[in-house]
Length: 79
Image (cartoon, rainbow, N blue to C red; front, side, top):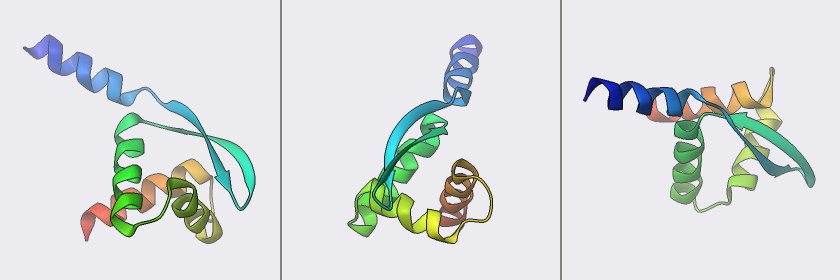
């Protein structure tokens, strides 16, 4: 059982690169699967596409887009 838990955590820690369209421009973003899953859930909850949500995050970010998405997801979970 411990081995399965460690394997699951290790798999969740590996970033997955995906393409998104931000303000009409295609770009790649690397996030861990748990962040991709939660980002999709938040987009669905807000009735927007992932691209639309990422564009809104991008418009307000100061650092990297990946970091801004992670912070957005974590802040959304804290509410």
